[in-house]
Amino acid sequence: MSLVAMLFDKVEIPAHGNATGPAGGLDLSGYSDYRLALRLDGKAGAEFTINELYGPAGHIDQLNVDIAAGKVGSLGNLNYRGKFTVYGPKAFFIRVFNNGEAPLRVSGSLYAVI
Image 1 (cartoon, rainbow, N blue to C red):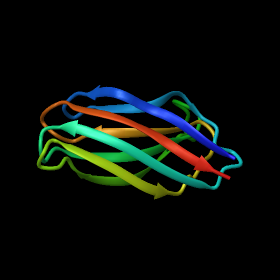
Image 2: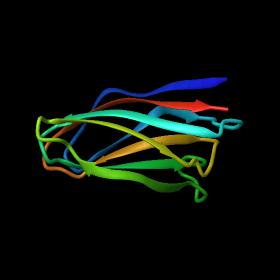
Image 3: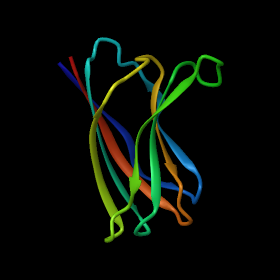
């Protein structure tokens, strides 16, 4: 059994801002293998960080872990694909930080299998 969850659909992230998806979060209980596929479009060389956020929103138990960091390619886009560990399966989100000086657009999905 597998899960495919759309996290972002052409979401624009302002300079030095971030975007969190999906709305409402996910419950990944029972899944054990996770793959993230993101498309980033923006100014060539723009830096970004991908972060895993989990736990009750706004609660002291809400934690986050960086998954990856990088730069948008010379053509103004980057296709990121990677496996990662989920530390807390309930109330799970992916957050993308735009560390650049110009807006960045992100689209992508999370794939999970049992």
